[in-house]
Amino acid sequence: MKLIDKYNIPNDTIITIGGMVGIGKSTITNSLADALNFRTSLEKVDTNPYLDKFYHDFERWSFHLQIYFLAERFKEQKKIFQYGGGFIQDRSIYEDTGIFAKMHYEKGTMSPTDYETYSSLFEAMVLTPFFPHPDLLIYLEGSFEQVLERIQMRGREMEQQTPIAYWEEMYARYTEWINNFNLCPVLRLSIEEYDLINDPDSVELILEKIEKQLTIAREAKVR
Image (cartoon, rainbow, N blue to C red; front, top):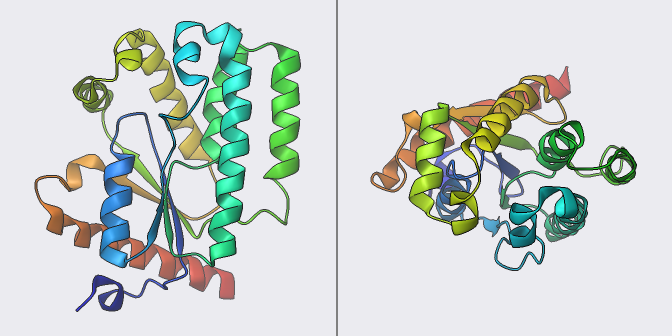
């Protein structure tokens, strides 16, 4: 029996994965897509022309980076809904403004003018009745020590050279952001509850939780 038949998860469902850098978004994206026979929408890090520059000079490149991400994620979101759903998406469009752009503005590495321009563009593109929000956002969470360990294990040079204080700041902001997020249904998932690399069958535990959360969301719409 295919897992998509075993669980009541419609084949046009759109699920977005959110969470800190290095926490395992790509792993769960691929595992869920394989289990459900869904397409994947992966973050295109290697083709980003600003990412390396940004990590070496936040102040100069933060605005460019955020505009690039906003454009790419918006185009990807549009493509997903044109396909008719059935996607697992690595990272949400909401994190860019709620965490990254806001952090750089408040820390002075993005000018007030640039932040206002970025925020206005985000609101015009995303915070409208016409923007197609996902059916569910899965938020991956763990302790700061666990997240830092995963970043170090991943071994990306630009991340290794980033001060730990930056990751501490981001971790705190992620926690605040998810505690106030309400643009679509959320399933919070602790990375301690599964090990998709060493135990691929643990994806079924996640699918059970997804099924339950989607059912709750559907029933809430009916009321």
